[in-house]
Image 1 (cartoon, rainbow, N blue to C red):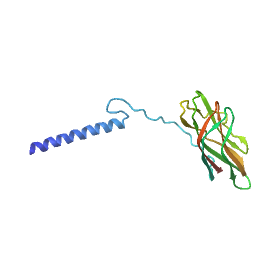
Image 2 (cartoon, one colour; image 1 turned 60 degrees about the vertical axis):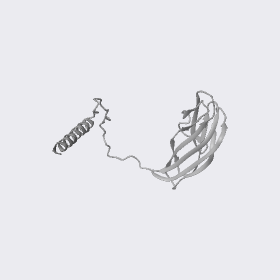
Image 3 (tube, one colour; image 1 turned 135 degrees about the vertical axis):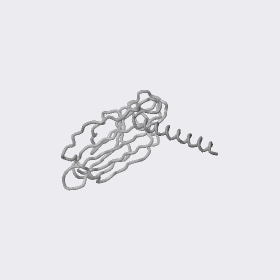
Image 4 (cartoon, rainbow, N blue to C red; image 1 turned 180 degrees about the vertical axis):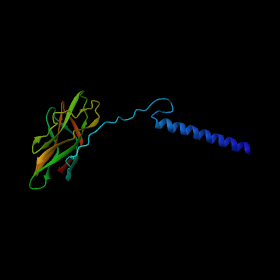
Length: 184
C-alpha cells in the first residue's frame, strides 16, 4: 500500500511540474512546442485634453423585406424597398444619419458582376456610392453586399432610401437597412 501511495504522489508531482511548465511557457509567449505566438504591438498615444464630439441616438428606422428574386437591370441604380422619412429633431443644428444596408443578390452566371449599395438622402446619393460593395456570385448562388455610410444633415424631416446597382444585372432577394439618426 505504501508503494502505491508513492507512485500516485510521484505521478501527481509530474503532472504539476508539466502543467507549470506549460503555463509559464504560455505566459512568455512561447508554446510548449517551441514556437512563439505573436503579441499585439503597443503604440504611444498622446491623449488630448478635449473630448471627441459625443452623439446621442435620436431614432432608428428599420427597412427590411424581400424582392423575391426580382431582377435589377444592368448599370442602373434601382430603389430597394420603400422610401422612409426620418427626423433630425430640434429647431437648429445638425444630425448625422448613419446607414447600414445589406442587399442579398445573385442567381446569375455572369463573372465579375460588380455591384454597389448606395444611400440616397432627399433624392441625392450620399458619399461612397461610387465604391463597389461586392461581386455577385457566378454560380447562381446568392450573397450579401453591404455599404455602411453616414452623412450630416440639417434639422427637420429627410427622406432616406437604399439603392442597388449591378454591372450586368442580377436578382435581389432579401434586403435590410438600418437608418440611425444621431444628434451631437
